[in-house]
Structure formats: structure tokens, C-alpha cells
Image (tube, rainbow, N blue to C red; front, side):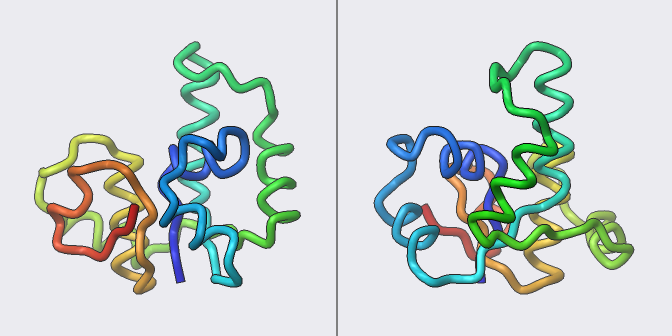
Length: 125
């Protein structure tokens, strides 16, 4: 079971050529793929401040995720409790939450981010 980092989600939906071959294979094969609601939150914030030029609404992105059979992962109290324990390796609050969710739910993160593996969790790119 896999959890897509935000950039991986965006590339899977809108720019497949930016994905690694491993990432493509995982996403296209019959694997359980999860998307954090934190990723949609991050996308919305970046759209609103002009850091992300994707014209799709969050509702549309969520619908596409559903059509792709990606599971939406809510933010649960256990994720937030684990978040408090994380060392300050990564400063991005969305990535820190995604890391916490992956550990709590025993998911492998599909990411190109080189800081995430420093937490000692499973990643693949």
C-alpha cells in the first residue's frame, strides 16, 4: 500500500512524464494507492497564493482521484500525535503530516523528495 506525496499526485494526474518508471509502475499496477487530504489542502493553498498553476478545482482533483481508485486518507488524531514526535528534518508541514500518516498507517511514500527517507521510513521513487 502506497501514499502519494503531493508532487507525485500532481504528476500522476497531470504530468505522467515527470514520474519515475518505478512510480508509474506502482500507480498503474493494481496497488492500493492513498492520497492524503493534506495534499489537497497543500494544492489549494499553493493555488491561492500563485505558487501552483493548475486550473483544476480541488473538488475536480478529488473526483479524478476517485475515478483513478485512489483512496482519500483523512487526517486522524493518531497522525497528529505521531507528528509531534517527528524530528525537525523536514520543515514543510504538509510533508511532515504525510510522513506521520505513512508511519501510522504503514504505507510506503511515493516521492522524489530526498529529505523524506531521512526519517527512516519506506519510500520509493
